Length: 406
Image (tube, rainbow, N blue to C red):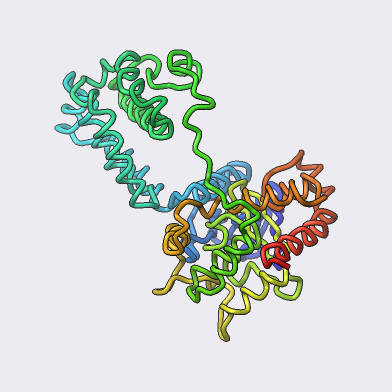
């Protein structure tokens, strides 16, 4: 497997490389050296397709800044944001901020309302939203829940106005209320950047609205519905009767205690079949850290059912029927077709954790590391990595045995 190390270059190397070529700093960041100069670029994968994004000349962008830019891109990919579209949207927003004379006069007039400005802002940034559903949610939440603000001059929106919007749904629709608050906050921040407002943002949560709204730390918390681990073997029998690729993807997800997105985006290049090891690159992980997954014999058997001759390292392991990556709803729809709409794909990770904690002697650290949760400092993680992988191989084999009812 290729090395996943990061920060491989030094500032001196960046400044002194003379031989034309491409030099990796790790984590998707590369330096291209040409006779005409040196420039940074990022290589990543989006929906199973490779992309390249320029980050500027090394004369203008020092090594530390290039690493910051690469980290931002990796976090965007984890959050489901298309970094290329996001950059285009940022340019469009800067262009909108300049505006022509007529547009500028209209924007800066005293009658700019929250509703009109919010619509223009959403139109300028929605290109950075990878998911069309996310775009529609932005519009829907503002149109529905922030409607009382729509006709107010954006310069005059106050804390009381925000409270009037949030209080009716703060406890009954906790997740929606949080999103509404965050989106209103962004609209007002953008208005301040445009010179349409002054002072603090009345939609700010920490240290402001959280002092005025009721505490809901234990109210409305929604957990992913999980299948009791005692029922997992019977469920797997039914699942294995289904021939669809989505069924194999779900089976593999359960056996590896992985997140759905990690499985759906998996390519054959991430697999070392000889070592029975799956290495998920950092830019596809929630914690932005490379994750190694030891594969049980049952997980290897699943891969054998979908492996064909002529596959390339960049090909996804569980492709959609019409090609490309399975959608984020494919596995959820499979559960509904199995009349198991009462549970979620993510909930199987809870089933695994409950099983390991209640019925085995494996340590908490190994279980949490199997779930790709950060445990301890980076030094402790590095020290434990080799030993933990062997223990986790035993853990995943035991889990596979349990899932099979053996």
